[in-house]
Length: 402
Image (cartoon, rainbow, N blue to C red; front, side, top):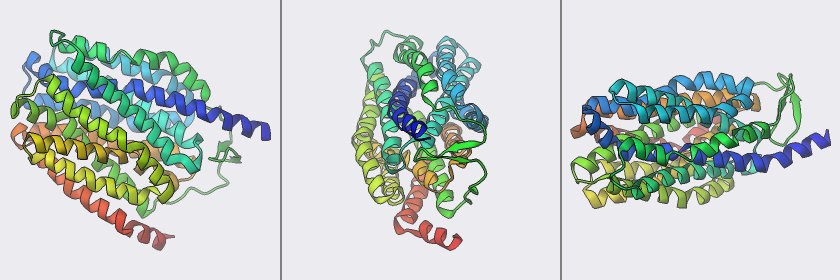
């Protein structure tokens, strides 16, 4: 028994490192796509509504795939980790080869399915096998890796010659996914194989399934679910529609200028991630999450309403707020039993991916002239949630339930 526990503990650091590399290679495409959106639309002569649908197809696919992937990772976590990067790569290739609206949507859908499999599988593995006392830091470590991948994608895109067509630029920038595919077998085998009828706890001990009752859905957990969905709506609207459209049409920015705005956002995110994770481990994720939600609300408001300098400041504040992207999962982990992790992570991703889908879709329907409406609404909602978390209202309601 002691040998098994020691083996599990020794396997955890390589798993965390491998997951960080996987998330890094999988997010180059997220960083590369938004600056290319105006070029893609111009090449195919797409309307604002069609552009919104192309951008939102990615989030829609992640929304639809979240529950099936959650069921899959509950029983076949290793298999999911093995094939997910290849599915994402297939979507990137399909998008680069597309020449019509339908082809663009198909490519984005396959990309979304692959990304959902990568994220849910990786997060489930991390939440089940990470060391509990450093969970927030571990979550922010993989988030840091993902942001570095996004930054790498947008930086590499800005360095490519303007003579590269959008499809060639996409393939070049997203090429690191090949490393994720090569490492997938190692990631898969780094996850401990679960014998039937037992579950692994955070401290490495094993307990029969069913001996511990599932924890009820608490007020704090509900607030964490809500925060994740609202974060996703605000993020997807601003990154995949508002900044590209305002930057290109109101301020005349080309792909290099747009890339610099995204780089500013991601650099601020990177600088804040590790301190935010350490602070959440020390103080608990609830109040730290509330503070970053308020910061994100302020940044989103400036991006929606400001001139170019204020828009840049908004990008910086929004990037600081993005440091709280993983904190709702830390709250959910504290409110869930190990047997609930895979399913609740999938349900959480339904809300997040639903927000990723609705953000650019609604913005496309509103049109570029009214694209700031949704980010402003989300800023109000994020401010309310942040205040509830900081004031401890969710904690008081949780104690009443208990």
